[in-house]
Image 1 (cartoon, rainbow, N blue to C red):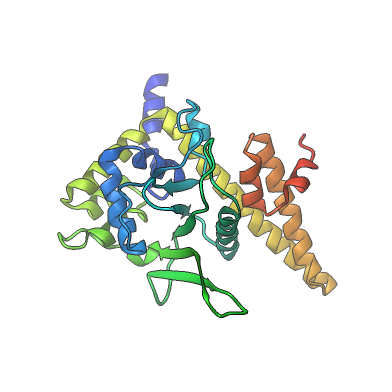
Image 2: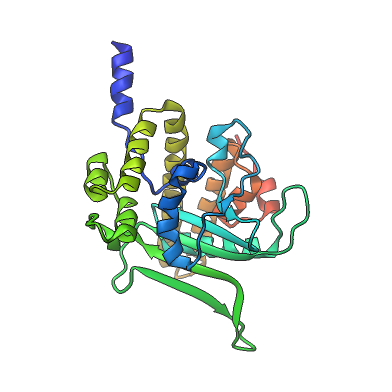
Length: 295
């Protein structure tokens, strides 16, 4: 009876494509790369078939930890790093942090035991939100003194909810694949995929992963962390805003947000998150984080 209940619970788990954990699982398997190339190539006008995951712990054996690392794609053929953010809970704060991360990547070299030269950084943000005017957007920085474009990095935003409701019709693979990222059930995934073989392979694998307890733990952990961080940030902003109103000071907003960033950092320290990741998600400095106490 207990085994039947556990099986029933596993069958109900839905695994979304809009997840770091899911992306990494599929991207590590050569058979699924064409699916992601169909999505990403039109965004950055570049084939990503020769790119691979940059993952220092790719073979650590600790699946739960590996999947929580950032999505970075690198190639031996070009001096480019592609950073991908799967934003299930997008906000202005999230986008700001994403951009700070790009600056951080530019400011240091990625290396895996040997020095490599500085690479151009491309960041792609897949946001589960709707934009009133565009489905995709790109951003560049300009040097204030020279008014010249800074070519070291590019940022691309994809507004996934603009693709919600699209179904494969035989001639719209890119849009249908982006629509798959918005699905909230296996039934919806199959409706979107139609008779497209690549998409159906993805759906079949997602359903299999939904029954895999080890994968489910890694996936659930990611979802919990993102929800927790997103909620804490919102609370910090709201609490600070109310305090600011009461005192008639903007400082109240900043103090409330700061308190919640500290809370988030303490939670992440408890779960043994890497220091670099805590810096990214909270905005606190390494020194501030090292000075925190964890009960």
